[in-house]
Image (cartoon, rainbow, N blue to C red; front, side):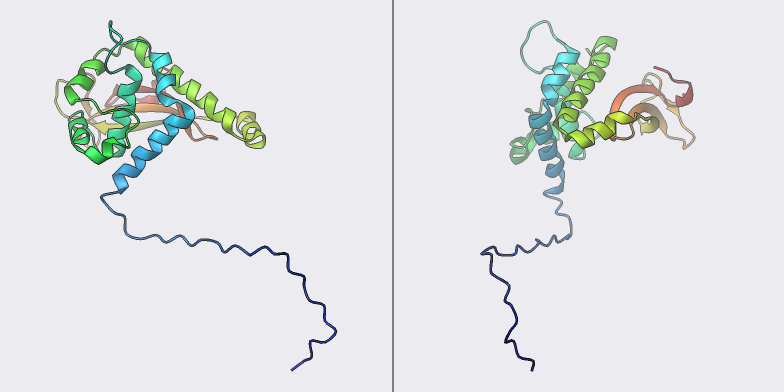
Length: 215
């Protein structure tokens, strides 16, 4: 064995080396997975002010300033969708989840109330959603580091993506049978490619060509 005599010892700094925490990916727990998206939405609302920005853009949807507002309606519907619901009746199922209601960014309304408010959304309110999204995007950019913000503002690439949404009921306005045979409407969404965020959206007929849509 070689002698250690004459070798310099590395002085101790008093700092312990921190070991990286291991992340284990296991089987998703179906009891917790739906609530994770709701918690993410609540945190996004806290940091970015989703509800306030949407309400400022949408404006009043009722004569009396009481009960559910337009911004609260959108957040409650987004929460229900993140929990796996597809229809207004899913709001009633969310209301029955007592523990889940503690995570919601806003109290979940009954489906009949939400539907009644949604029917009051006209062209002005729909344009207000896009104005609210623009305000949210501005807030998000302001929270980024200067290098990241500069890189995002250097180039702006807008991608237009269309997605077919299956609907039920032949009386739905603009609903049409797509090439798959399903009765659909088609959502056309404009994305900021570099940031991965939506900028504007329009609901089209099920067979309308998004390339001809300049709304």
